[in-house]
Length: 213
Image (tube, rainbow, N blue to C red; front, side, top):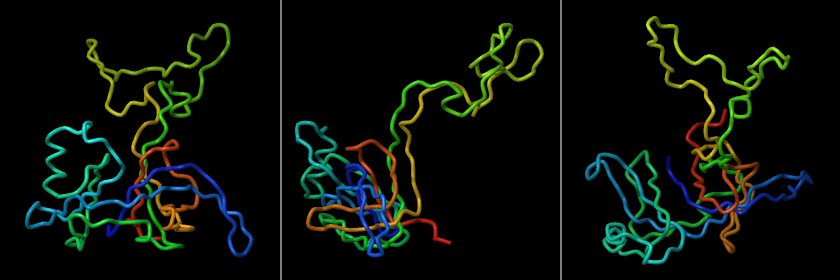
């Protein structure tokens, strides 16, 4: 990975291409990020930069986090995210990154936290089939048998078993999205298609890690 930036998902819109095609886009606000720390193989065992984004009141920070900003000599920010680099970073502590690090037409990956949908059963969560709905059946929306076939009552539920539980609210990466437009004056980036998370959520736009075939 060579570059990335943090932003806020504002919602979806649409723009017209030069040939008249209507393109659905997600609007991402990318207020300039600040480089809080630079890590190298010599000092930390790997190459990375730590990006800071978002306004925060100093009273909401703990002393260790506040000391981290004081050491770097930068103003406190709300979010801190580390971005791994393939080579030694060319960034410096205190440097600011804006949306113009990406160009129109560039292919990116977007990372966010999907919308939380609360507790859900296996039919809604994993697209299971329901059981028979005749009068004699007592298994309509149940997940069916759980335990392994072991003698002496020693059955167990194997790891990874699909069961009812919380749905959504997990880290999701959408790959190979195209940057349609970059508005540096308003700190906005328009990305083709949908990206994970509700409006107002934190997202990371990064250079794609897999080449486009």
